[in-house]
Each structure stands twice: as structure tokens, then as C-alpha cells.
Image (cartoon, rainbow over all chains, first blue to last red; front, top):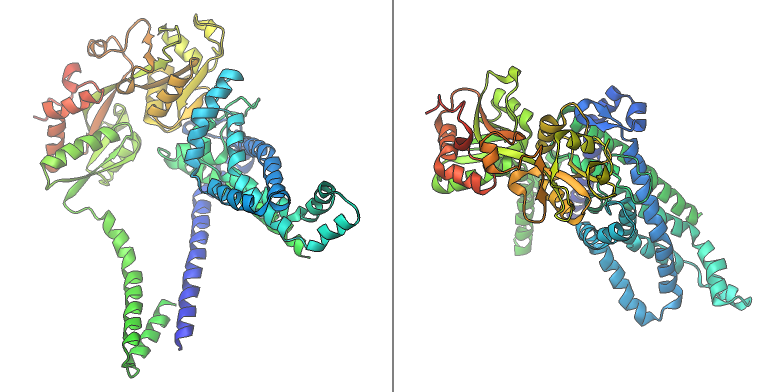
Length: 281
Length: 301
């Protein structure tokens, strides 16, 4: 066997082992989690609203609602900011300025989530508690911080999809007499729609998966939040906050929470893939 | 996959070896890669080997204290290695039963079903209710605390404070402190799901120190000047009151043995119960064994 073949084999082996680790993780989550869902009953597990693992109540509905509420809040904050920023970077900024801004946005993606959480805890939470009421540790604080955290994802993917548009789109619109703004709003943004939607969905995936910052600023009450000033718990923080001492059924219930999370993230990623593929055709 | 590539390597060696140096170096590199693949599982495994030591497992409330004591102890007795694991009080009992650990840690008394084991108190810890210093409340009846934490009392005005909703702060399910609070104060009442949940005593203290309307519970040893520990039924949670058995929300920290302690386990226990070990625990905010009573240690010495 030639040396080239040998290296190919090694690379294949390494690639397969990284994928098999993913498979292993999924396998273990399911092996640990599914028996409990079976035992409790899928409906009771997903739609139950009482979480008292030590007494055998395993309802994760408040966490599912919490996850989606916080994510929705993050999108409300992050999507307008992110898309505007992408449009600005792509269409309106002088190149030199863009060269300063772009690395800064990449830096934003590199900030560890615990720093975002700490900042939220020290700055946002007291502001909300003093001016809006409630405990401060709330859906609102979580949404604001998550909104910032998903900005880099949304900005970079949206900008890429705007840049990938053929020059002729813009030239055509401008030569028909459209203003620059009309070109952006009526031609470029709709044309880049699938990429932008994909960026939003990927941002959503990031928001749903975020754990550390959310443990710090959501307050983690296992209740369904009624207002945005209420504390909430997401699926990820449910695992993160309770895994330390969980044993037996309680531990399995946390894995089962992971199973639910797994399906949600899989769904979102497939959706993103589907949307961005459609662009190609 | 593995063996096939190994064979490839074998075949290569049988070929007339290229006399140029680069070839040899490359071969050496490959050998190293294989060595790495062969040995890394063993390396990982090696970390878990426990040679000439003993394992202590159980309550995560006791764990930090046991770790501190074991560090001191190992500094003096280099030949003894102590491995400390968490898992919770019940897991500690289980570990001692199945010989997975030589010593168990528990932050609750042994249940009637566990009386075949030997529990030795190494210290006592009190659960205290804390509020923000600006909160005028200084005393609550046990019933009021139950009402507050079960979510029936939701406003400070109902228990003599200003008109403001109460922010409840609790530990997560499974925590030893929560278990002790549930057992000692709440009884059969459930802790409200509206309660904020923090995953350590320190985090609870931080939330209380920031929020004038919050109330929570932590270990007495962790109370500092940023929070106020409330009297319960008029009794202040002080070491004196715990010694005099006036403040009753106290839990024991036990070391659990399957048989009469012996060998290195006994040596470590003796160290903890010595004045030096107890001094460390008292310094960390616990109440020493000697100052309460020594019901179960009598048989040991």
C-alpha cells in the first residue's frame, strides 16, 4: 500500500472516530434517558408542570416553555440588530471601517458565555430589579443577554449570504432608478432571504443550547413564567443546575431532558439545512 | 481497521529499508503515533488507579470539609492517600455497603434501615434563614417560614414587613442542604416551584445580598456580614444556642463505616476528631462534636 493510501486511511479513521463519538454521546443519552420517559409516560413527562424529582414528579413543560420563551426573546433582540448590522457591513460601511468592525464581531463570538452571564448578573439584573420590579433574575435579562450572544452567528451568516448575491441584482435595481435603500429593502434582502433565515435558525439553536449564562441570570425557578419579569428555567439549565447531586431516577430524568433537547436541536439544524439548501436550487 | 493498518506497517518493515534518513524518521513518526493510540486508554485508566489509599464517598455537603481535612492530613501523613467523591448521603451509605468506599459521608442521621452501619459524627451544621440587611425582619416563626417557602405567604406585609412580594431562593433538588431544610423546617410541605434556584450556598448568599426582598437558607458557617441570619421562634442561630440545643435546625455530619473503623480510615477519623481536626472544622463555621455531645463515638477510643 502506498504512503498516500496509508495517510488516507488514517484520516478516514480519525474522521470516523470523531463521528462515532457523536454517535456514542447520542447512544448514551438515549440509553439513560428513554427508560425514564417510558416509565413516566411521554405525555406526563412533556406536559407535566410539576418538577419534584425526589418525589417522583417529572414534568418538564415549564422548562420547554422557558426554553422557547427565552429563545423567542433572544430573537426579538438579536434578529433586528443582527440583520441591520449585516446590511450595514455589506452595503453601507466604507471598507476600512468594516475591517475594524468585523474582527470585533468575531471577538464577540469568542467571549465565553460565563462572561456574558456574569455581566448580565452584575449589570442587567440589578437594573431590572430596581426599575421594573421582580427578582431581576428573569426571562427579560436572559433574553437580552442571549440576544447579544447570538449576534455574531446572525451577522456573519447573513452578511455572507448578502455578499454571495450576484452583483447584477444590485446593478439592475440601481439602473432601474431604485434608491440605495429601495435596492436593499426590495431586492437584496428578499434575494438573500434563505441565508438570513438559516442564520436566524442557527442563532436559535445557539440560544436554546446556551447553559452557563442562563444558569446565572434566569433564576432557575421550575415554574412556567407568566411575565417577562418572572424567573424561568430552560431545558439546558435544568440539566446544568441539578446534575451535581442527581442519582437514580432523577439522574435519568436529566438525561431524558437531554433527549428532548436533542430532538429540538436536531429539528432546528435540519430546518436550517433545508432552508439554506433551497437557496441553491 | 486497526490490525489491517498494523499489517501494512509490518509489510513496510520487511521491504528493503530506504537508506535515506528521511524515510527512517517518517517511520519513527508513525511508530510514535501507534504508541500513542495504544497507550492513551491506559494513561486515562492510570488516573483512576488507587494504589495504597482509601476512598471516602457521600454527601456533597460534607465533601468540601472532608477535602480540606484530607489535604491537611496528607500533608502530615504522606504515605496515606485519600480519595474523596461526592454523590450524596444515600450514595455514600450505598458505597460503604458495597465496599465501593471504605468511608461514607452523610449529612443526615442514619435511617432505621441503615442501623447496621456505624455513623460517627464529625461535626454539626446548622441551617439558617437569611435576608438582606436592609430587610427589617429579624425573627420568623417556623410556621411563617413554612408558609413563605411553600408559597402560601407571598408578601412581606403578611409577616410584618413592607408591602413587597417575597423573592424565594432555594437550592436545587438533590442538594443536601435542601434535603436538610425540607426535613428540619418544611416537614411535609413542598418548597414552592416559584422559588429561584441556585446551585450552591454561596450563590444563594449572593442573590440575597443583592435583593432586599429575598429570603433563602444556607449553612450557618457561610453567613457573612452581607446577609442577616434570622431568629427562628425567637432563637438566634448562634453556636451557643446550638450547643444548648435551643436552636434545633441542626444536622450532623457523619462518617459512616461498615465495621468498627480500623487501619487508615480510623487514623483519619482520629485526626478529624482530634483537637486539631476539630479546630479546622470550627474555623470553617461548623460546630464541633465535643461541644454538643458524643453519643456514638464512645465505643471507639
